[in-house]
Amino acid sequence: MSDSEIIGSVLAADQYSKAASVQEAGVVLLNTCAIRENAEARIWGRLGELQAEKRRRRASQQPPLLVGVLGCMAERLKARLLDSARLADLVVGPDAYRDLPRILAAVQAGEAQGSAAMNVQLSLEETYADIMPVRQDASRTSAFVSIMRGCNNMCAFCIVPFTRGRERSRPLDSILREVEALSEQGVKEITLLGQNVNSYADFSHLQQQQQHTSSSQTYQATKQRHADPQQQQQQQAALSYYAPGFASVYKPQRQGATGFGQLLDKVALVNPEMRVRFTSPHPKDFTDDVLGVISEHPNVCKYLHMPAQSGSSSMLERMKRGYSREAYDGLVERARQVLPNVALSTDIIAGFCGETDEEHQATADLLRRTRYDNAFIFAYSQRGKTYAARHLADDVPAEVKSQRLADLFAAYRQGQAELNQLEVGRIHLALLDGRPRRDGQHSLQGRSCSMKRVIILEQPVPSSLRALQQHCEGQRLDPQQQQQQLYAGPVSSLGTGDYVAVLVQQVVGSSTLLSVPLARTSIQEFAAVLGSTIVSADKAPAWLVQQGAAAAAAAAAAAAAAAAAASGGASDGESQQVLVAQG
Ligand code: SAM
Ligand code: SF4
Image (cartoon, rainbow, N blue to C red):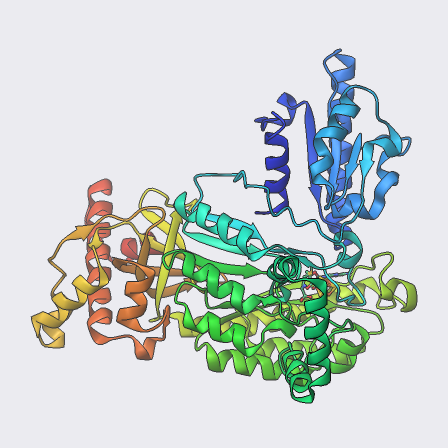
């Protein structure tokens, strides 16, 4: 569950409910991010607007509006938010949400002002493990599950370790219970969340074991282990937790912990028909065992976020990222080897302290060569307390940062356009999640396992991929005949929450896949019939490609006929094109 859902659960347990609008609310809570200055600027703007609502209520003698600032900005600015301007009435950091009802009650009763209306204590243990989620929108097919909090990495530019505190992982059992509950509620896709999600390390089982072992036994066992050189060597080997070439500034304590690979494996097994994603990972923790688990489970999405930050080794060193360009390139190669057709995304920072033109060009080169499906590119924004704010000069002029941002964006788009060419003719497994805003009457939309938006025309499809396969293969028609021969078996209509096999016809915008629906299916059936959740155009079986062509032709003919009927005239190819491209 996300922080907003944790806050929602804590307040729901205290009889609070969600208001439909600010005008109807007694309390407005802003859940904030402090990672870049512009994220904070938006919150200052919002606080200004809420002041106006507060004044309006005072003037019309209505009950007052209470405003709370929650999350990372609360942690960063603390009492400054409660100063004389009283932009906020309460301030609660990311580890103190359980204290919200108490603080709210005290502020409402007029008993708490200033520091009494604030809790920004960071915790070494808080994971909100026992809080059951109140999903923000229960009709959605997807849900978030928080598995760890905080970060120990101390990248030179990043405020997260200061606003979210030390890294700590939620016990495996409580995660699995939440995933099972979501599966029972019919959720079709979960995203595991954490500031460093794949750095997950749960020790709760060891603590339980320790409770059952007397301290003298533990002492003897530890003494023996330390005396045995072979065991020492094994321990040392187990300590190389990172992908080759990656390191971290801190010494992780992970001996005996349940790691991310094991967690992912167990989560994937809860319901093989529920998709699993995760964010935000750190590249160092994409070890072979994690890549192996992703490859093994058809329901774990083949989409990896690999924040590079820069393509220059000297810059990566200044950023204290713990890897070189070569190590990063090696990891990308390994990921593409283990997970063919995997989609990759990244985070990049433009104009970090002392960035030379050569270092900037190395990052543009990384974006062009690696060819990401998605990239989040930010101008460097100095944040107080970080290593960079204390020791490095923010010396790249604003206009140079903007120019570099634009250059990097162009380099990313070039790589993405090349990848998009490979999409036409691919077969994806899409999970439908609603209707597109445009042409919502005739179309459905969903996501591929590679996170691409998929749009299909709404039309009946074979009720299973296997039925379609048997039908097509059983016909033994020559390709010419088969192309004209539409499937004639049982059909299903499609809706939100269904998995559908689709054939990509065209990529519109930066990455929307206009596609033909081939058959309703399931994750397991798709993987069993086609061997993967993303099938390259050159590996797509002929029977399916032919069915796709026949279905596309039928849909275009139906659309043309409908357009002709609506206009009272004859139709042509152009009207078919318009309908398909409208998504
Ligand atoms: N933990 C992930 C990692 O290190 O790979 C990334 C998570 S971080 C919360 C999200 C992204 O915000 C970072 O990858 C970075 O690109 C960006 N970011 C963090 N601090 C920033 C800053 N001071 N200025 C600009 N972007 C920043
Ligand atoms: Fe920030 Fe990610 Fe570095 Fe942690 S690992 S300090 S979250 S950028």
